[in-house]
Length: 357
Ligand code: PRE
Image (cartoon, rainbow, N blue to C red; front, side, top):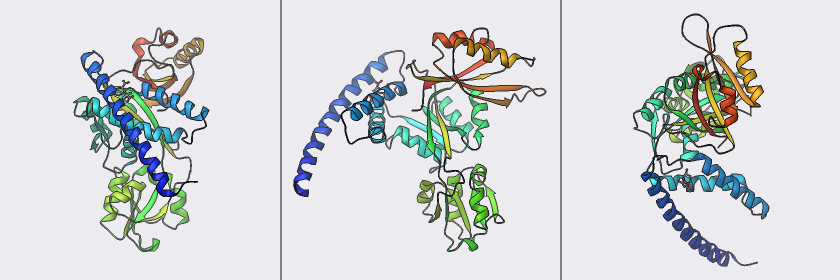
């Protein structure tokens, strides 16, 4: 066994080689950038290509018994991709802010440290930032496994020409953060209304159910408000508490340990099929008996797997509904074209994207 000094000399030598390889990779990425700028399809972010690289490397590492597992490979390579994309062209990412929200955390996990971030105050303003080209990408929450879908995101996708270009899931963990020295000193708790719902058991068990619960637009804003008043607390993310220097009193206070949110990335381009895609559509069917059954049986006949169906009020006259549907496949796949035949005027395509990256 070598001593620490000797091992570090070996690590330095490997880091030198890694750096040389990374620089060589970046030269190729610059070339990719030049080719893209000269072509019609200028989109730099190619989630399907990134997924292909991650899967190939994870398999290679597994088969060769390497110490890096899938998560480790993802952490390193997602950062490399983010740097590559910025070399091709700096990217601006709008997200549902302010800083420190779970959406911010999700955006950073995908676009890395060096992208430019624009925190927006509403989901609507994320759409406007991308539509007006102030940002190339937008990151918004679309559903939580406890609270269900984020209706506002679905409704705005229905009205916008932007497409979903990628999706990602993130475990949501809340903390009770406060400058108060003791639970009994807390008079008010700030948070997003859904977060109160997600931590109901903790609030009851801690005798906090009669404390004033004040819903705020985001959990990060809640952390900021709580940092200004010793008699208040915030239910917020770890990173929001850190951002506003707010001490964490209790961690992981959510009722359900499986609290997970799915986010989508919206942009103005269309992905090419990857062979492992998912498609989201909105469907407005005639208000007649069997209309939904007919639509669904067309999917069954084409052998297409539906992974989600949710109804939303159409918000027009009477009580008609729009259905938000996710299914396996890319809109350009023949099988999907077959399933949708005859319904073209009833659907709005929200995007086709590689599954779960
Ligand atoms: C690269 C970078 C960004 C894309 O999202 C996918 C891959 C990479 O670093 O490998 C290169 C690239 O732009 C591409 O292959 O299209």
